[in-house]
Image 1: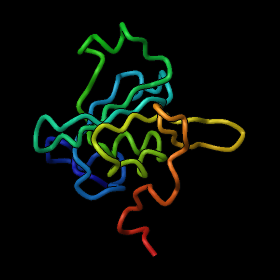
Image 2 (image 1 turned 60 degrees about the horizontal axis):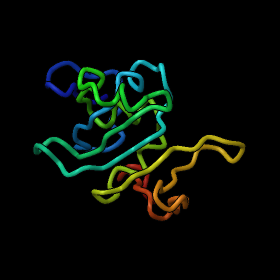
Image 3 (image 1 turned 90 degrees about the vertical axis):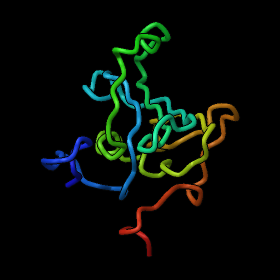
Image 4 (image 1 turned 135 degrees about the horizontal axis):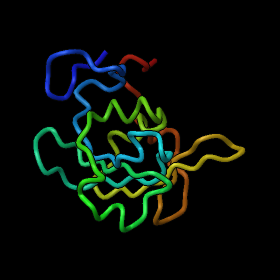
Length: 130
């Protein structure tokens, strides 16, 4: 189990990525009202900020522009909601991605090019490396 972002009691999700840092996620993602769909990696605003911004398939521009619809959370917490995010953890600042769910499974695509992110470019946590 991970330590809660404020320290203290253990959180209710595993630590997939050691010292993964914090990210911003919409309340729709965190509540389950929407599935993780859109991902952007912005420059970090604080030492704990890994830069990831996680949005759901139901988030609108109006919804996203309201700061009260966002929450700072441990990146591992969002990975517990959508494990496919483990692989994007160390992709470059400036990455714009989308999670696609279809008959081929769950895949991550580069939004500007429409190309899938190759498996060999995805992060593998230390405990899962061969």
